[in-house]
Length: 282
Image (cartoon, rainbow, N blue to C red; front, side, top):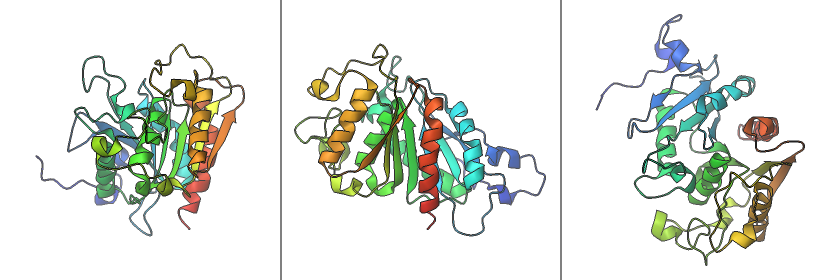
């Protein structure tokens, strides 16, 4: 284990080449506590240690794990709104050679993806001048699955939540076990679902109008399959209805002329996050 302190951009003299790895589009960093996982960031080029810490936006990839491309899609956003964007990488094959889903389901079999993300946030805070008590979380597709389940476990860590086109949803249902419902969250994760903790949190649900192809969806063969629907539009509507039943006011943005395309819905996502990032500075 290295005893070196993480270098911040301002630790290096002007013109040092290391600054280019720590600002703008950064290198990928292995997570110190578990190097199976890594993360990259976009850090505004003028990032400095002065003034209040800047907002942190976390955006989570889908099954294809296009973390670097996703990071680059937030570059202009980070510069314009002076925030740091963190993109974690959850590799396939962590719990077995065919594993592509464990990070989405927050499976406790072998690792806790939610705790991996929180460890990344702590590392980011040790190197950059960011606010980490509460951060803005967005995910699409597999990342949307991760994001709404993370919110059940850690609502106190979120400043806002954007959930895009999840292929499978977990409803607030104390009679159905994880991951379809929340009945056994205490046994699985050490905490119960608390809908009251999500009330008042700014929440966006977003999906393409034409995201109705179920061919790539894993079959939702659990007890709530009839309630959640057969495509992503139906399932995100089921999640919204469930949350509204529990007093959680989630806006739903349906993007016209768009199918299952993360980058096509990003302008709508970023308009939502722009408002929340500026509000979190007030």
